[in-house]
Image (tube, rainbow, N blue to C red):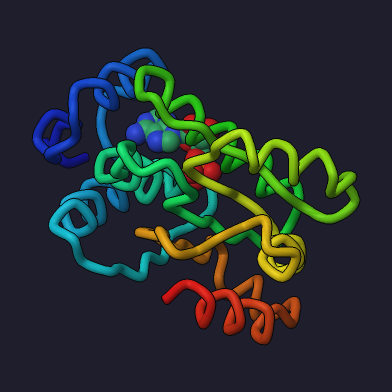
Length: 175
Ligand code: AMP
């Protein structure tokens, strides 16, 4: 047990309110360690068992730092599977409950037209699998000029699945 409280980490009130509404009483170890590092503007690599709160560890600081005055996609979160994309999207949407941020999960197997229409409606954070994200970039519907944050969730798993070329191309497009 550590004595660090969510209030100590530098998160804004909207996010603290959602965390409270989610019923979380104290930050997990990876949250306590990673959130201040990200809020200070650093990059981070985190390694922790599944179910230890990694999503909030990167999701809360991104929401905290997102410049919502810019109407464009500002964060991309890559996940190895469609299930994880949905799960991460839902978790971050819960953390964003009191913030004005729009998220969109994108993955293969779902009609791309719907995702294109949704993207055009103004999305702040896209969560998706590398292949579909790349497809949307190549179709010129997902623009990366304003990207502030790129997350590789379960990076080891994505590399095992052979997504390295897709990820490298996405990174190349992001700067
Ligand atoms: P994750 O590792 O991000 O998949 O999170 C695993 C589960 O733990 C999810 O259901 C989260 O909503 C929950 N969770 C995340 N952070 C905390 C926390 N600080 N206290 C209790 N539960 C949490």
